[in-house]
Structure formats: C-alpha cells, structure tokens
Length: 273
Image 1 (cartoon, one colour):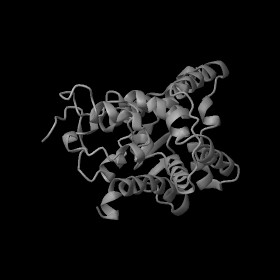
Image 2 (cartoon, helix red, strand yellow):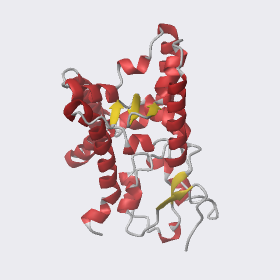
Image 3 (tube, one colour):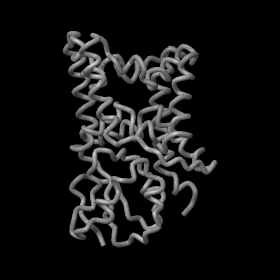
Image 4 (cartoon, rainbow, N blue to C red):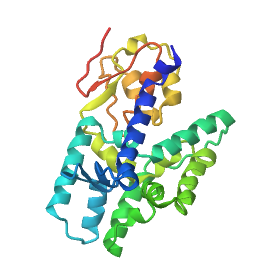
C-alpha cells in the first residue's frame, strides 16, 4: 500500500480543515468575505446564515432571546450533520483536531505510554455543566474557555494567550491522556456525538470476513471502541455498520486497512463477500 493511499482520507480531512479556516481568514486578511464570522456563527456568501446549535442551546439556557435567523442557521447545521455524521465536525472541521492529532503522532514517536484515561462519560457531564452554568450565569459558558474559539480569534488578532490554551490541550494529549481532549473532555464532541447517533453517512466493515486481525484499524482510530461491534460481532449476521455516535467518520480505518474491509456508505449498508 503506497504512502499516499494509506493517508488519502487523512489528507482529505486536512484539506477540509485548512480550507474552512482559509475561508474565514481571507476576509479579514484580504477582503474576500466569502465566509464571515467564526465556527460559532457565520454567514456564507452574505446570504446563508449558519449557527452552531450547541452555542445556540447555551444562549437559550442563559435566557437570551433567540432570533429566527439564528434558529434557521442552527437547523441547517443540524440537518447537515444528521446526514454526514455528527462528529464529522470533529474530524473534518474543528481546527483543534489538527493539534490533538499532532500530539497523538508525537506521543507515538516518543513512545510515551501513560495509561490513565478519564471516564468516557466525563464529556457528557461537562456538556451538562456548561448548560447549567449558562443558565445560572446568564452567559454562554463554554465560549469563555473554548480552545476552538481561542485558536480562531488568535489567528485573526494574534495568538497571545490563545497559545496557552492551545498548548494546554496539546500537552494534555501528549503527556496525560492519549487522545484525551477530543475523546473524553470536549463537550462540543459530546454534543455532536448525540447527533451522530442518528446520522445517515457511516463507515461500515462490509468485508469483515476478509479481516486478518492485524489491528491496524484499532491503532489509528481515535475512538477504537466503536469498531468492535461492527467488525467482530458475536452474531456474524449483525450489521457491519459502525453505528456509535462517537465515530468521527475520519476514514483512518479505510486508510490503513490493506484488506479493504471498510467503506463509507450509509447506515443501511450490508455485508459483502
């Protein structure tokens, strides 16, 4: 398997992530306002408003009135991720994913083997806490500490303190917990994971009979626990679709599998071969 083929989905994700950042930045930098705002709230081509539904939910909890354009923008985003996969946001859009992927790769190169991981429900508790704090404090709580927002504003206005926030995420994943931020802490991922449970586009182990148990897919997957129910079910007639909301549709399993076990399709995919 060539190096390019082994990383084709990874390269596509990087093009998506950097491309979306570029669309936001060419306006302030070069006066080309194709996409105004940031990932919390934006306007595409001065026509289509887009709103982060998680931000909108915090705004509603804080008691702020919600304008119709914001509701419409959130509905568009929700519909989009209900189709392509909720946590596709994490792997195809979120710029912090680039930071945590870099930490995971450096961790692998340095052979760092810390084994502590937070409880998987932690990010759900943080999600609930941000809504409760928003309601009590009358503000959008997560935006006060959101690394995504810090990074975006830092690129626009000079990173400054944003470097500290981004570096903290990087060091946490490097030295404390393997893929800990995205997998166990970030409430944005938790929110989109809820949407991901009903999304249409899915990765599926449609040729699981060809699996040679090499383990490559488990090693590269940021959420390896989602693979087993589809790849190694107790009932061999069970669906091959990775149905868990935690799946980010990143495509890394498809990148590294020399036996072409996985493919991208829909939640209705069937076994092949």
